[in-house]
Image (cartoon, rainbow, N blue to C red; front, side, top):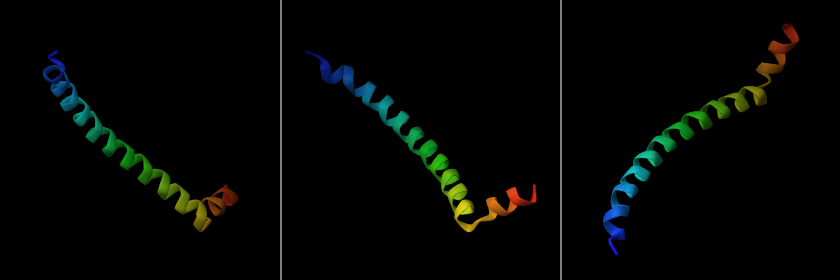
Length: 51
């Protein structure tokens, strides 16, 4: 069985995908965190009240 030879390139692709996914997840979580912070500070409520 040559499973090790077939799984090594697959693992490399998974690691590349994982690193890209980690960056994307980090950016998205940062955006969500900023929006939650704005809601906590009440800036969104004030802006909605003005408009």
